[in-house]
Amino acid sequence: MASQTVIRESHGDRLFLFGIYLFLTVIFLIVLVPLLYIFSSSFSSPQAVISGKVWLFPVDFTLEGYKAVFRNPQILTGYANSLFYAIVGTFVNVVLTVMLAYPLSKKTFYGRQFVMLLLVVTMLFDGGLIPYYLLVKDLHLLDTRWAMILPGAIAVFQVIVARTFFQTTIPDELSEAAELDGCSDIRFITSIVLPLSKPIIAVMTLMYAVGHWNAYFDALIFLRSAELFPLQIVLRNILILNTIDPSMVSNVDQMLAQQGLKDLLKYSLIVVASAPVLMIYPFVQKHFVKGVMIGSLKG
Amino acid sequence: MSSMQAAPGASGAWRKVKRHWQLYLVILLPVVYLIVFKYIPMAGIVIAFKDYNVIKGIWGSPWAGTRYFSQFFDSPNFWLYMKNTLGISLYGLLIGFPAPILLALALNEIRNGLFKKSVQLVTYAPYFISTVIMVSILIVTLSPNVGIISKLFALLGVENTNFMGIPSLFKSIYVWSDAWQFTGYGAIIYIAALAGVNPELYESARVDGASRFQKILNIDIPSLIPVSVILLILNLGNVMKLGFEKIYLMQNPLNLSTSEVISTYVYKVGLLGSSFSFSAAIGFFNSVINLILLVTVNYIAKKLSSTSLW
Image (cartoon, rainbow over all chains, first blue to last red; front, side):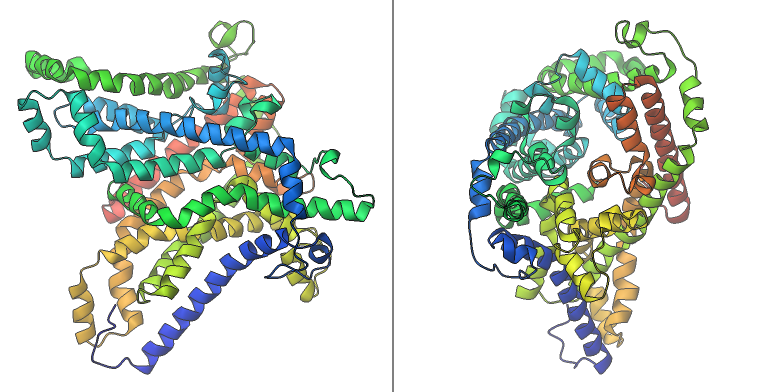
């Protein structure tokens, strides 16, 4: 902050700054080391992982774990399903969120306080799990792909963020001028509002997509058929409930080696499942931070 | 509602609606969504006061009064689940609320450069890890003998411990792994608030010979108060809404005495055990407590610091 000062920093200040660097380094390592350990373990031989030789770098490099992951039909189906839910679900999310947020950002929209109230109440109170489940059941959405898309189609937080964005970036004069020129509201949205709102739409898309990719609760309560399961449910079965299809661990006779491959597969699976999100993350980090900040303007 | 608003100039209101009829067309679908997926379940809460029968449906089933509520309050586990829910929530708040503030204050002292960028990049990253993966990471790293954290403890002489199976450790594992995952992300908002501090304040503090620590104490921390009060209200208002997802995944038969919370109990009794009305009554109780908390905390914050949600 005061880096360009001419006055030299006091000893106390320099010691303090050193303490801060030390503190941040420790935090940095605490977060990084477990991630690195999992990444390295996924490329190491099962024996090296079990005997504790792996710390930060792969030992006895191997791709066996990854081969086992990609041999598994459940994982592949889950991957495909998750991609479907993330793409279709995010599209529905973004369209509905904009459709709700834009009218709410217009002062000329009569009844906007009422719709805002309708929206805010849902943040304060909800019916709980059972009525939610029974609704989806009564709509005959149980065990269908729609159950993964419709119930969570709008996130109130995203509506408020988008509304704040529209209010601050699209001046009323602009829509009034367009109106005088005979431009309809819908045409104004598609040809003026949307192009001007690319940053917020990018952020929203990212947040919704990550949400879909990582979600497992709706799938847990609404889906029964294995062919509809998203990746997270498959992960839960393999990683947490420990149910591995024996056919996955082929050509290994010894019990120990089998156990080893089973553990190795867990590390590889964690990497494969997190890869899509973590790979795009550094590129969108800036947008993501911006989205959080817009949201905080008027929470 | 709308007729009341329209009272002063009904024809004027109608003119506004007519002029912007397309906006109403646009908002129709999302409003229908809100009514169907948010408000119908709210009305569906009556199931808590009924003897739910699948064939008769929510509305056709006979009334049960508050029987299911008393059944829950009288059950021996009521206080245990309350204690677990509040215990995990408040412990989580105690760690999870100040941690991002500390990180933001520390990062704010550092010049923009590779080190600062790396710390930010790495600490935000775990936010994107799914709950299933997070719990899997906990299970693998804590597994006896094999996991890296177990190995670290083995160096300290604590060997062959099944950390996930020890009831007294459940809360700490939950809370500290949450801190590991969300501190970086939580700091973003505070970093933004600190970036908005008027540079003249630092300038005059420097002229006055203030130390770094004094600047943090007298400039940085006061400038974070409005944001942190809002976040604290939101967090306290969600104390009873303790997340189902992570706890459910972290549960195992050994740690249930400290890991069973209201949301996991609602799921097990209701959807796995098919006691819809009983489960809905517990869920309703939970929502009401939550609402009361939110309103109370907001009221107190308004009185004390004039910062509030509404």
